[in-house]
Image (cartoon, rainbow, N blue to C red):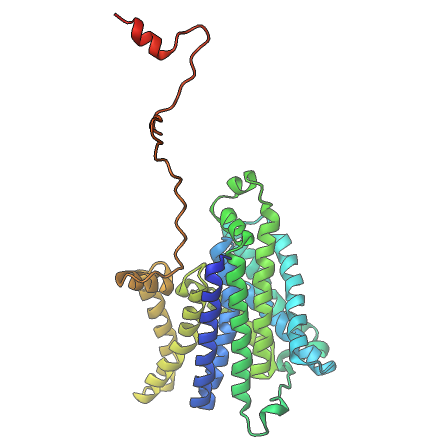
Length: 372
């Protein structure tokens, strides 16, 4: 990551953290819950936008990685009672291993074949809970106990603490991914995405690069699953259907593939649009059958409009709008230093190249003097 962009990323993360704290204090409990939901979505979508947008691999199974992180959190909390920080690290590690396994299997797959393989993972893995109800609780799931720390006081709202924890994890994830995407690893991902043959000829290990992208994406999804477990306080297979995986990919596309701010825009759309559409339908006195379909219709309309107006996602529209006002959307690169080519007194101009005389041929001055 360029040195001049690091303070910019950290400054933006700090501003967002302050905004989250202020909003969580001023808003009600339901809005705190929505803030936590958005942070969970951002954590998962950020990893997916790196996988699909930077490395060019389509995944329809990140909901399964969220399930792995959530069940790992529930089992450790239920049987060991460890603090959440330790549980979060273990959940991330377990999903990283699962991502490596899936990445090894999918390293040679491309396009629809890769999408089909990850779709199989997304459909099959959550059903393991029904196969082993004694361990994973079956359809009823597992309860997760998450409480407010004592130093915040007895009356501190649990939903506000959940919003703070989820937002902190999401911001740390975004900062780390921003650093990684601008490093050599990120450049390798882009090289593999653009042309695998050229990347291999340039010395990039294509298989290892693709697997690493899966590991990073799975780790982010696992942390999002751990956060979802402590917010809903229940982990059940019904929460990790294939619809969740498709919603994550849709959020990444709406926000803008390959852009971390796009993960935030897409998450806002996925979480807030159905809620406000439901409120509008209820306020206008629509029947329950009609009102239940309004969020889906609004969701589809927003997706179509974004794809038609801003093919590069909402973040692409933001860049276009900033460009109209002459505001750069990315830190400017330093200008390359231009060497001084001014000729010295008595020296030949820099544009003229001295050609050495061939052996046995007279110098140029002698040729000119001897010319009649």
